[in-house]
Length: 529
Image 1: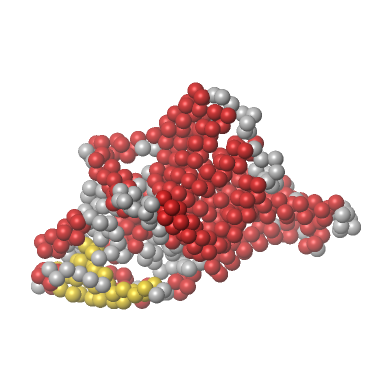
Image 2: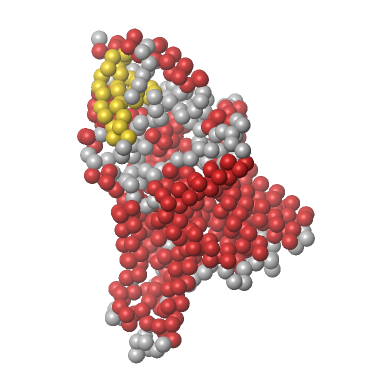
């Protein structure tokens, strides 16, 4: 495809230009897709603010799970803590983090596409699967744990596709690839382990590739190398919690709570038939709600699964990745819109199929001898051989990507909100009247007041979790009874005991689609005296 190849071929800094294009694409997609972007007044998603508060607490000497509680993995909080260092009271640092992660998403997509199409075709297609994923309902507001996991899935997908497409069964997977796959799995495990089903299938199929060559001992060694890479990612946190005598708190807060409290795996739950039926129905609705990327996932996976000259294990490994990723996410019974984002990783195959079609069409034009002079067919269609026309496909790629986000993202309408209209900034003016204020957030997850006021949580249950733990409400009521914080933020409801030590300082409504809440800000009575 000469119309794509020419501008890159003629430039000495080709890899730099390619990298800059991917970085620009990541920036532009997230500029409009994520509420962390500076185009939005604030990312007031509870989950993102909770991660920000725990990351902030981590970088202020507090230990997650024991001193401040949330149930995600440590690398998520560490990355959010780095974002906090960039900006204490905005999501600017989170936006930069999202752009960096999206760059690695795009780099991985590009590498995957290059397995099927030419380098230049892959480059201009690469932004499109990311735009499809990030303009969907499952991207949600931006900054989710699933979004942070995404590049690790993309690169894991690349490693497996590259091996089973081009090397299996002639070669065994090398130790370097196995070790790197383990690192990817370990990072995912320390962000949100429900996504680990992908890497379970990944290593299972690699193990089968060794067994297919009757190399049982080689398969065992491969698993050990993979687990070594995975274990390496745990070392910093084993040291961190070990020194602070918090290993049990780490296990309790991240593993026990998620497995035995947040999910329904510890209860009787539905039977096998009912669970299969519910998961099938859930998949149907996920496809309907996120057809913008499932419209590429389905034909792309079908193309690879049913395509000619595919090895049996090559077909099975793709099915296994899809099946176990979905099962790992949803087997626990919980489902929220953003849980589905990792499934969009398979959408790149749909764009690879499109790329094959584009290249086939270009070859047919070229073979037909049109245009008359022996120039490139597509250049002839464009009607110009000038240099600026060669960059048109890349410009169109960015334009289509931005257009997808602007037309489909649930976030775009919030770009036009003003800070002064958000209750957080109205409450911020009150809280900042107190020197070094402290805060307790009850009746909901972190609403964002900790962030905009740059307050480090001082209570373990600094927010009300969606968990069935009796300690939360009991301890929060005790905090209030003792007047342990200067301010209390509540949503819709609050305990009667609050009136003993606190007075109502402000209240304001909050709307999100059909949802409507009322937030209340209480101030310690002593502060008014």
